[in-house]
Image: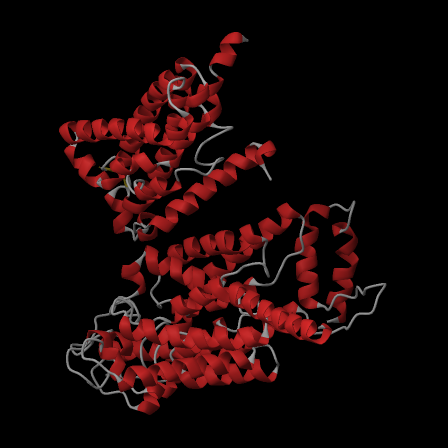
Length: 206
Length: 397
């Protein structure tokens, strides 16, 4: 029972309290980086790393940060971590870093991060805060990966750059769906995920 | 006919509550009311009854579409025979070539669209709505003749589910279903929906040497010589009469101005389409074309067309007669209808003239104004309320 309680911050955000499909936060990056699966995965990992570390740092500092300047402090911590992530990406995976361009920098403005810092890290101990960061990162990343999966599969016929649909399909008249690559389709895919999710979780229905 | 009615009435109890096929009640009801006017009447209150229910309305629109539809089929054959150098102009061989070319598309649109409607009606326990009767015939008519059936199936499924059923079904959609289908195809499979090679059905035959499949608007958008005369697919110049009759390639339902006018007349005489929308859209289109024509610029070749020719080309008239007047997606208020129609006409011509990426803008203009229709209505209603409130306070003081 106690163990279960410890892991609530980790498990809850994955489905019941998902930052994207329940709280509807972080939608802009879900549109921007999901036209291919690989950037979506990298984005998911980056956000998870930034969020969990920022959560721990803010949680450690929570008793020393004055109330009136807490947003500035949070921003400084997040910005520092984002710069680190950005540099690591540039060093190890330059291609993806180029594909993601400003969106790594824009993790700073991701509403999920500020939301978790404000709502959770400021009032909890470092360990639960860390779990909360990981959980929300996974919850966010999961949606990104699902959206990226469908958009790349139907938009380009590939996954992670590998051809999935065989050439014979294209010869028979199949064509990639160009709308899948455009941002509106990301919203529609997210809407479909919300649709499926809510029909399984009746208590979330309004 | 009496025998049919008797037979249907005799199997009716099986579909009612507790009957053997009670699950299929909505399907039965759909077919029953399609054939016969329902005899249910309201028991209390005062109601005005009109035998023109939504099924009759839809059928009237389909009848109004028939001239365009039949001419379009014939025109497909004509374009095919011209492109392949076949000198035969026999009416029936032209017509049947076109008929067979589009039949699979029409069937696909109906089977997929009605299939989804039937399934959703069963799941929700609603009556089957008849909105798709018109959309099903409209969809192939506004697509290029060679659109593959599977693309139409995907697009119809997308449009019916995401533009109609998620909002509550027929009568609750805020976008025109046929246009959503076309927009989906247009953005998903651009190479099959625009360009010079999709609007004439070659059917595997070799084209003659002088052949070019460009539509008149396509020719104008890509022309380098200003004021160049538009030609038909084998290079002969098109006269205004040809343009008015519609002897040129295009999405097959929308080329003939004459047939659209006949269809429009049927809709106006039966009171199904609203004349305010058509009139104001025509005004908007003509005015915008006149403005564009007056300040024509070599950067935008389409601005050199004179207003009347501009209106007769492409899908403009078809869109304002059959799409903009859709009572579900148009404005409800009288003033709103004028604004809505005018903006559709003006925006369609603006897109056509000044966005060189799109030779035709009627589809995007109608969809855009569909989105704004509720806002226009809201503004009209509120300004009305404000005006009357002012009158009220003046009187009181």
